[in-house]
Length: 556
RNA sequence: GGUUCCGUAGCUCAACUGGAUAGAGCAAUUGCCUUCUAAGCAAUAGGUUAUGCGUUCGAGUCGCAUCGGAAUCACCA
Image (cartoon, rainbow, N blue to C red):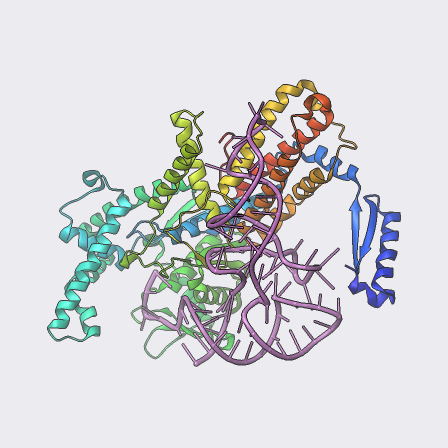
């Protein structure tokens, strides 16, 4: 595209393109020829450059990856961050998958990555589950009911809400207004009393709290495990919620914060287009922001990261704008400016937003189980019978979970996305199984090819063997490293997903149009060349899917 | 109401950061398995990129306005 040069060349686009093309042909050895169409200069790279690239990189197991420099500062990434009063749902799934995949992508781009989780294990929400369990639970445990711990605790969260609503209705019948009734329902008062007892360190309350949280952690652990995610460090709010007061004091000293007439500490952000924000309650206790200021400082001191990433939904955009503004611009911390809010869109249902209290959530465990079942059924329907029971089980897990992950990760993180529970997630087309299938087919092809070719497989002279289809695949393989780099820059697994899909699609066309093994006897070098390209493609597919946290089978 | 984000095929999503004729999948119709794995390939059909004006060689992409949707604006987290 030569338009920008017209001011310099002072001639027509065609002439300008021709002049540039001639010069490049003269000085650049990569270029074989060029042509000009309507102000676009198309350069053709020599075949030998492409085949040379294949020879050089095909066995490089770290193709597309950058090595992490010694002593580099790490990147810290926080994700998941669940509450302990209910099981994980589809919204958390998006958060977890994004956080996990971005971690892998950043590592591939040459960063040392530290994954952290901040569990919200204290507060009114867990007290609601606790009080409901105490009143109506009859001593149920995960063992006695056979329920997963997080689901059991979630059941009592719903139970709380049921009784709470009944009590509010009762009070309204007695003539109380809506607002008063919602504040004075006895069960709510009990939950609030329980929170106060917790904060006072009441032994019995702490014991119950510890027990129920323990159930939840066991449940979360199995969910995380099935999802294939893990953390380097887990923080608990019960340990961090008092942090931040140090920063408040510092802000007061620096006169960045001030006491409001009601005794609360605030900051005025109106000159930056935001509002006045409370940082410490008038009774001296912390709010959410106080705590986040504190944990940020703690983490900085602990790891000295070059960047702190928070994977949190876009409903908290305002909160993170404020957090970054306070630490960076107002308090003047350089590290405060490295805070990056990886803000992702909500997962919506056809009926709108998910509401845990209204039971319109899609449960993470149920969804994973359903996907795996579907994969198994599909496999059976397709007549895949050459698997042992154990192999079939593993394959269904791989395909089902993969389909779910891909479905979520292929969408641009910033955008809201829609999930329709009535329409199951596809297993054909632009999906993980499509890509996994392409991979499995290549592996099988290579095994057979090596057998037939024997030593001739190692033939490394690819000169003159390349046709249009091969060139197209090689060109896409060549672009893998820049896609990884761009995905890391933009924190977008979607770029990797789309890249991998395009690669698989191109390969499948090649596979369909060009016989590979059939050339084994008549044209062994060509067969070997095609097999090497196939193997390179399979390796890149496996690596790219790995960046999404998706396994690929050798056989399916 | 203030601020921020979003409107692309019937549906779900792309479009290399301003470039060539806006692409895939699903759903629909039609071809291709005596086997390199048909979870595949090929083909048909589907669009005034919400609307209008502007910026320039060139706009889905940038600016302004209008319409429609979402989030947020707590001494909750």
